[in-house]
Every structure is written in C-alpha cells, then in structure tokens.
Image (cartoon, rainbow, N blue to C red):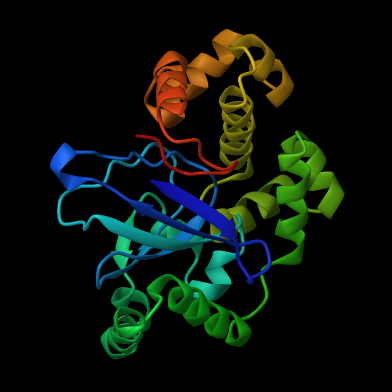
Length: 245
C-alpha cells in the first residue's frame, strides 16, 4: 500500500509504502526528476535521480518511508551535485558521515512515529542547508508546463552550455532528459485518470501515441498497456507517485 502527502518542506512530499514480502512484490521506480531521503526498517538511504526504471534489489525491508524532494532542490540538502547520485542508491553515511547518519537512524528508529521523525530530520537539515538554484527552479516550472528547453533557457537568460552544466548539478542530467521525464510523468498521470493513450500523449506534449510508447520503453522499461493494467489493479495512488507494482 502506498500513501503520500505534502511535506512541511516547500515542494517536497512525504510517502510511505508497505509490501507483502511473502507475495514477492517488487515495485520498480519510474523516473520523475526527484531525489529522496529514504528510511527502511533501520536503514537510511538516498535515492538519486533516475534515467530509467529502478528495480530494488534484495536486502530491503517490507516498510519504506521517504521524503521526496522536487527536481533541483535536493543537491543543496544532501550537499552533493545531483549527477554524482544519478541512477544510484547510496547510504546516507556516504554523504554525511557514519556518525551523523547513525545518530539520525537511531533517532528515527526510536521515535513513536518514525515517518514523522524522518520528516522532522529533513526539516531541520533543510533549515541549515543553502537554497536551491532559483534559476533552475524556473526551468523546472517552464518544463513542467510543457515548454521547450530553448524556451527555458531564454526564460532564465542562460546559454545552452550554461544551462546544461547547471542542470547536471541540479537535476543529475541535462534539461532535455528532464523535459522527457516530466513529459512522461504528465502522460502517466493522465493514463491513471483514465484518459486514452492517444489523448494522454497529445495532452502531455508527445507527437502521438507511438512517441509516448517509445518513451515508455526507453525511460520506464514497460509498455503502456502493462502500466495501465498495474494502475487499474493496484490500490489507487495519489498523483505524482513514483512506484508501480
């Protein structure tokens, strides 16, 4: 079961998921431009920005919680450029040191409400970290609205090379990849609402249904029909969910 709600951290989301390990359930994570601080039964991890579907390997527990940071906002929080975490899951200790990560893990494990404590830890850290790049926040807004990369560059007054370099630090990849990821998420949101594939493709900014199908194969590793079957059979998830069964 998956649940999510708005965090007290600006633009972030808190989420939880429980799985039935006896059923062998595995939940691939689809690219969404975000980065997460994850807690799973006594372990603190960081999920970097994905360029393709991520399938969790063994060693995970049945319960997960996370704070999902909006595209471009997590590097200031974690203190590392996003491209260094691209397509990776790493222990928080690798970024903040074993002593700090161990202390935070113990605090969350001992809390009456570990999920609330995870958010509180993130909230305190956010207050001490620097602000995200405001120009890149404007880029995200432009691309989320369906704008072009060239239009985003013009909006923030950056050349193509400057935008690409700063995007690597903020998002983990260039603006063209971010635009593809955000477009795919727009389309899948419409598919979950029951919009036909062709209509979802056009509304999201794809040329046609075939274009959307290619993006699904490239970025998500599954077909549109497979995704729709999962979205229909699983417990309804809020818009913006990163996971599928």
